[in-house]
View (cartoon, rainbow, N blue to C red):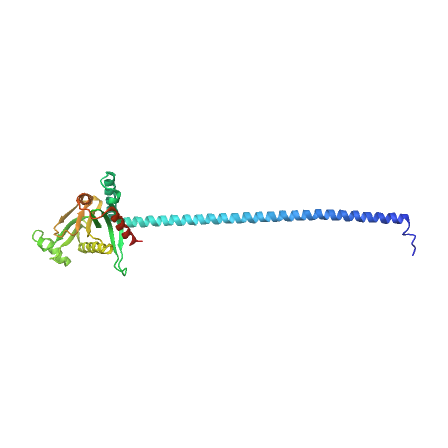
Length: 302
């Protein structure tokens, strides 16, 4: 092998140049490879950022729409519930308008007395729609109104009513009121027992007659039951309150000799009764005892 070639200065110079060029190329390649890698990494970062941004915006839009749908559903539910409540209230008011008007009369009377500084607010407590549960819950009793005062407790059955009332009539009144004997016979009523009859005009040619004794008897029983449940020292006074429809014409004739049930007609009589007994009755309870009785009654109606 000719070794003179490897020792030739020209060869050596060419070889050296080639080595230098290779090194320069390698350095250039490595340098630009890093740049390319940086560009690729930057591109991947931008791509990921765009994807994340898109997914975030998509998720935000989804949540916004979901929230809007939820808001609409909630609004629909609330509007529907409100409408149903209004319809229920309207129906309830139509059915129990007499009870509502009685509540209104009682609260107005109390506010007037408190405003005039004749009583304290704690001297007169008013409860409505109280239920007295029985042991087996099959004979639960509803009390329309309870008025708790220092002079006594008053249980009121309220009736929204129109017409003419004959209260407490029996055979002893037949001579004075001969026409009612036929109604006793027609309704198969006990002539010896006091009865309450309500005459009302059905239409232009007819009159209806309602028999009311069962309600009066039930009111007495409810008053006694309330006293027993609460173990009260004094009787609860049962009352029947006839609230005339729209202030229309009415009349009442009270022939009863039984004063255990108070029968009142109209707002004026109701107010007169409580004004009389609140100011002239004998105190039976303290304010503290009234509050305790109220709590006991409310505990029966959770």
